Length: 215
Image 1 (cartoon, helix red, strand yellow):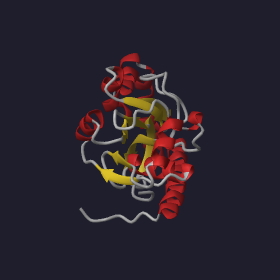
Image 2 (cartoon, rainbow, N blue to C red):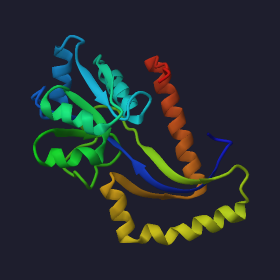
Image 3 (cartoon, rainbow, N blue to C red):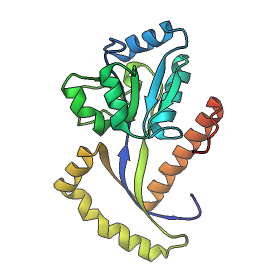
Image 4 (cartoon, helix red, strand yellow):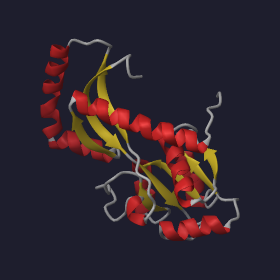
């Protein structure tokens, strides 16, 4: 993933959100963690798109940071998980923010925290995990890449050609509606952010003991 591609431009950052429903009756992260601790190890959380995803690992990070064991339930589709969450069959769901917003605003579920360093414009009333006192911060980046060894002059031309798009209000609004924050990065900034993410996730995978399984 490092040597096989040439970074050209960072496009956006993408957070996940942690939500609960009627199964827990909680209204904030502190009460949710207290509920999970009182469950004596029987609490579960769902993630979409499932095992090995950012959602899954944010859940692992929360369990480690709060010393609260919770079993993981993998959902391939966030829509099914949100239906179970709203119906009370699933107590906690971690997935991309955008699919949760409509049901959150309708009062069917409650988004308790987002995973990034900043609050989302889609739900500005919802705190980050760090703001709730849980030392977890995790986002993923989207970007434009080329094949390995791409001519630096061509990389520069492509990067500069994309710049006007990120000053376009309609483009930024489309990204926001998909739960993504516009985050235009230079090739070196994109490479650095991915290196930072690899370091964080390598430590988390090691600490969690996670082992990938075949489908």
